[in-house]
Amino acid sequence: MNATQTFVALWTLVLKEIKRFTRIWPQTLLPPSITMAMYFIIFGNLIGSRIGDMDGFSYMDFIVPGLIMMSVITNSYSNVASSFFSNKFQRSVEELMVSPMPNWVILSGFILGGMARGLGVGLIVTIVSLFFTRLTIEHPLLTILVVVLTSALFSIGGFINALLANKFDDISIVPTFILTPLTYLGGVFYSISMLPNFWQGVSMLNPILYMVNVFRYGFLGVSDIPVGWALAAIFGFIVVLFFAALAMLERGKGIRS
Image 1: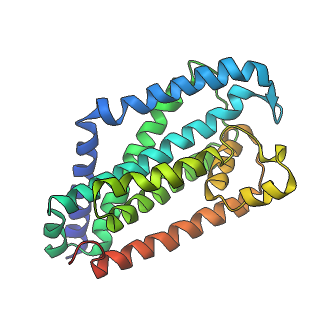
Image 2 (image 1 turned 120 degrees about the vertical axis):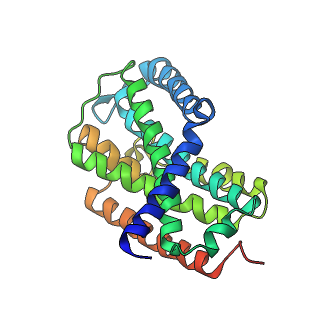
Image 3 (image 1 turned 135 degrees about the vertical axis):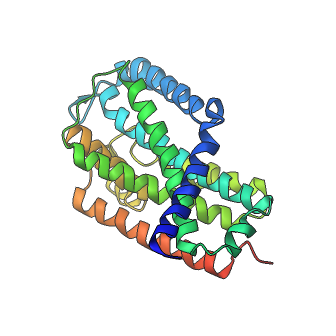
């Protein structure tokens, strides 16, 4: 395939993914915004008023970046995991595998589709948060960079989950038992400076902590960990997982019998 054909193939796959989740927007875009609105009301207004300030900011202002990032992570991941596994289940993925499209185009198409949903939901949640607080963004370019990178990272993670899954129940295991606990323990609702030294060290093993803190730094200018280290860690995770997913796709892992 030449460059033009490759671009057309990639754009077609991305457009198919976008149409897939926008066609059923009451199931894919609306529920996350309602869920996050409940978080804003319960944690931000009701509980936050009793907690007081966190790192010099109102509790509502402190948790907003984390909640936006949480919505981006869960939706980027779930979109790719469910979409690619559905293609496996329906055997339509075999048509992609025998097409002249390079494997990296197939992988990139699903990743970009997951990013579109994750970033779309993140934008919706950001708009919803404006009803509860007044957002300020100290570092706009850094904020955009980290949310795009995070969306890409978890889209890749969703792809790997779909490759390894043998049944629909396998799609929910990782989000339920791994992704959700890591998200809640990733500094969304608290600063790790509140923890004892031992648990601060344990928290540093949580990759979501880095993403939430850099994103919060973009909004508020405060972070529990060095921003440079966090960005390097995110880049490293993306590179490792992308090539791992590509290698598994080329071997037909979970696709070929």
